[in-house]
Amino acid sequence: MPIPAWESNQPAIHDDDKAALHLYWTQVALAWLERLSTTFDERLQIYESEDFFLLSALQQRPSEVLLAYAQKAQRRILAMLDGIARDDGYGKYIICVLQNDDDYYRYVSEYYPQDGKFAFSGGMFIQQGHGHFVFRQGDMNSMEPTLVHELAHALLSHLPIPAWVNEGLAVNTERRWAPRPAPYKPNEMAYMHAQFWNPETMQEFWSGKSYLRPDDGNALSYDLAQRMIAIIGRDHGALVNFVNAALDEDGGQQAARDCLGVSLNDITQEAIGADFDLPNPQIWSAGKEKGWF
Image 1 (cartoon, helix red, strand yellow):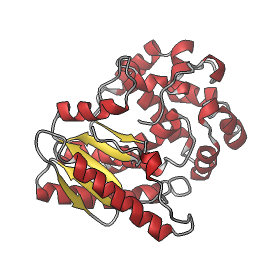
Image 2: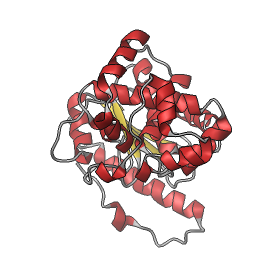
Image 3: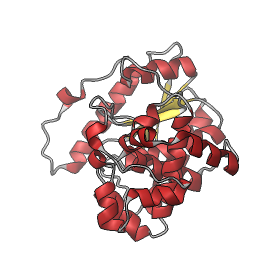
């Protein structure tokens, strides 16, 4: 895959010249997409809106509809996550809609670790180089939730937050603006939570490793994070303070104490009726992979 050496593409432009920096990175992004468009079995088309490029396997009309939806979703997320989300990067956002599973996994595998077992996915925000969204072609009902979820990640990418905070915010945003049917009934989900979580798996959750699991722990991690953020978000001001203070390095536990006046265990107890160990960074794997969701 033609993945640029982003570090060597730094422009000789002063940091204060924001318009020039935005234009530069927009031109770099377009040049990359033109190269990437010829990489797959069928040439992909490039479409453009005010804030987005779309590299698309879709026909022209659905591509235009998706771009219009992306513009609307961006405004909604910034309003919903006021005080948290930010749109202050340079260059247009990039959305890649690939034709099938083979193209999708061929591309995203470039950003995975070489070894290990990983969950299937329908899309992701790749936060390396020029951050971009990539997902598989589908109908609008399947692509819109994925776009909202991944766009939320992009608008949170300036924050050094734990994975569970990041995912909880993204899932809540998705459920607000592009809901889809729940895969399990509430009693089924409650049973699965009770069976899965223990001191070891909770440390995986706090560290972010559980989002890489290829089993039910993956879906349960998203659900637990969503519940916890929904609890914190009952007071938007408290949510803003917590998210802006939360750090990946300690799983957000200090921010919970300082901004919410509770421990993270108090929140998991309310969310799923479980009270396990607090985040313990000393036992987390030093090789935890980061940079994509």
